[in-house]
Image (cartoon, rainbow, N blue to C red; front, top):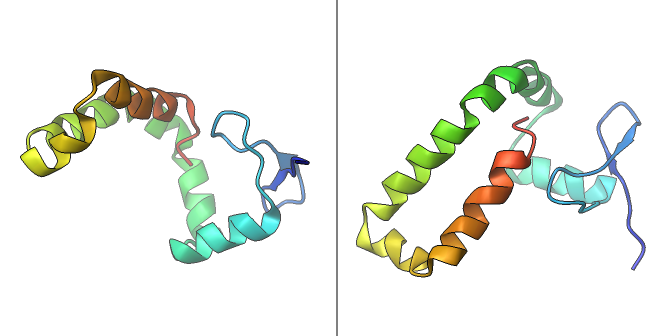
Length: 96
């Protein structure tokens, strides 16, 4: 299967932050529409990306600690390897 580049709005092709995955411009537009994310939102998120990266580890840790407090969500992470797998990639991705 051919990989297609992600287009960042400026016409520049960039690799998606999810471990070498490339998505099409159409898929990016679909995801943005699902999240109701406009170009202004993307610009705002981009401006806080450096700050978000500084706090990402503590926010991710707090998020999963919160999920693990509840039986319903803890059930999804019964295997410690699963929990590690879902936590680790998020630390290396762009926050914006």
